Image 1: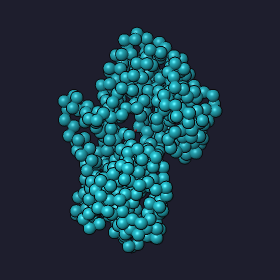
Image 2 (image 1 turned 30 degrees about the horizontal axis):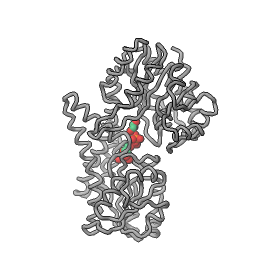
Image 3 (image 1 turned 90 degrees about the horizontal axis):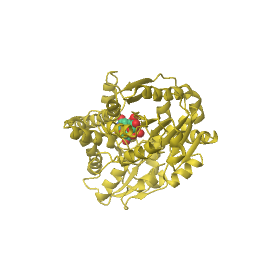
Image 4 (image 1 turned 90 degrees about the vertical axis):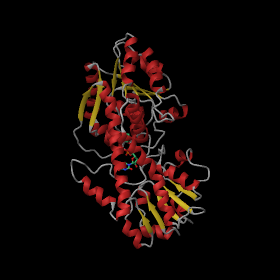
Amino acid sequence: MAISTITVLGTGYVGLTTAALLVHAGYTVYAVEPHKERLDVIKQGRSFFYEAGLDPIVKTALDSGRFIPTDSYQDGVPNSDVVFSCVGTPDNPDGSSNLTHVFDSAEQAGQLMKPGAIYVQKSTVPVGTGAKLATKFSELSKDISYVSNPEFLREGTALEDTLLFDRVVVGGNDPLAVGTVLNVYRTLEERRSSIMKIAGLPYRNIPGEYISTGLASAELIKVTANAFLALKISFANSIAKLADKSGADVVEVMNAVGADKRINRAFFNAGRGYGGGCFPKDVSGLIASGLDYGVDLDIVQATKAVNDSMPGYVAEKLQDALGGSLSGKRIAVLGLAFKAGTSDARRSPGTALANLLSSSGAVVQAYDPKASDEAAKNLVSEVHLTNTLNDCLKRCDAIVLATDWPEFTSYSASQFAKTTDARVIVDAVNALPKNDFREAGFTYLGIGR
Ligand code: UDX
């Protein structure tokens, strides 16, 4: 099937990246965004969140005349050969995914789609959701194929992950539709070196795998991959706790353990635990799926329990170093983004730490180079945000490094010593050279170091 026109529903990290890249792959792309403020920014050729290299990609897409941001399904869906759903799936209070947007979008799009078109689900949904949606589409009797195409991009490296991918997974009941969607990615792959150039990002020629699967498998692949990465982090954090007690350095341990190619070094950084829009939700979602199907996923439950314990573990370390009480102590929290390289502060460990320290009686000031605005929504009002690193470091008793932004990690121990009165630093991301800080007169505490 020849594809010329595509609609992308939702313009978050996944949707906007996908839409803009598909324009560069040669397609005409409608991107549907219901929020006026976001849409206005996109129409100016920019993204409304920070993502390396994305602005020039959105700008040039818009300049081509084949990128149409809109708030209406009506504009693009009826002409589209393929509709990608990238709508949000917030979590319910019990940790399961709220699929309201997923079902509503499918319903709305289904009414408008032309016969024979393909509906591609990129939003992460619990295994079994696709079967229900595929049934709904088949009830429309328009020969619409439903496929699952899980997204593996990380925030901060969204373009790189989408273009220089390890694998593209497409699952469905209709092999022809699966093949058509895989071909869309092949078209993108052919142009990836020139797209990376426009984005101003380095290009590496790495061969990616194209994997076609059944519908349920594709859904399960996504959450399983994320839960396994989260498991690696929680595993490293468990070993870090033992390293703290036994005098080992978890960085040395996990580096050497990860040197075994069967195990792999990635996602072994111990610290304040994982956050963000995916891992916490996907781990909870997998636990909820297990419960739904009556399967005990206790290893996934343990992953969550270890992660939930980490902010408290960091706070306790700090409390011990400050003589047993946090009350009235001035603490500088550096880093509110859930990781470096993004303005996203969803379920951010830095934000959780700032709130926890504040509720334990500390006077907390916090700084982030990109995520302060986002973080402010989730910070308790007692946490004071500063505009610069220097302001944050002024007049404090201790420092907690919660995100490994280069602005922090490139600041030397002697620069820290000059800027701040604090002589206690908790490196909750294990990103600082511990010996330098100890030599500069700091009580340096890593996690498992
Ligand atoms: C993740 C997956 O990596 C990606 O494939 C998926 O599509 C979406 O979820 P993302 O949430 O953007 O991506 O960030 P990632 O780089 O995976 O980090 C997630 C969290 O884990 C961050 O809070 C990060 O600081 C933390 N982390 C990561 C660790 O604590 N230790 C590590 O070793 C790696």
